[in-house]
Image 1: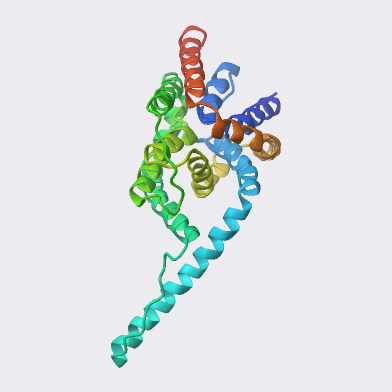
Image 2 (image 1 turned 90 degrees about the vertical axis):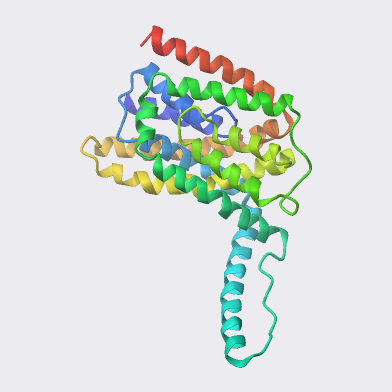
Length: 293
């Protein structure tokens, strides 16, 4: 029976991960409604999120290849500039240094790095609080409601612009990283908060969506690394471990089938529609948590 529950959660994760409605919050609420016993920490939820990263990597693979190549070249330029600095100091020459941020992808890479700084800081600080929040009756539903408010404000304010990586500012990258860090708590949609923050920074809808999902790759990978130790927890069984891995595969396969369709909805649809859904889902989850459970 536990395996069937995990399969159901994997399908839900594979679909909701690409919509700004908090798949994490939905997973927590559904586990309570089904009476599932929570495993150690939030390992299951993180593994299901990691499964959907395969779909994100495949969708944005061209951008990721460029980002990786430019990042490596930028590192080589930094090493070369250090060597030039030492040479200039020793010889008195005035050889010119290589420009580090010389194209759009290099700026994109730097922005992603800046966003990860507050994400890592908040995620590490809140690491012990997240399982408690996930087990709460109040927090997942309340978080979904908060997500709805953010989406509605972003939509009704008609935020957004036409900025892509070339025109975007580093301050917006930091704010997006802060919002992604806060989304470790169930109900606060990572994509909903980061896309809305990008629009507030003048990002175009297309770039805000792309930035949000590419930024999720190091964040979810880091979260998985932090949770892997839970495989050694006393309550973890071999069967449970295989079920988690199986669920991760299913969420990834599901995500690969639906990601392009769902991302088009996010890019072209009105955020208020997702906000209305969040209000409905949040109120229903709170009502069920207190009236049924």
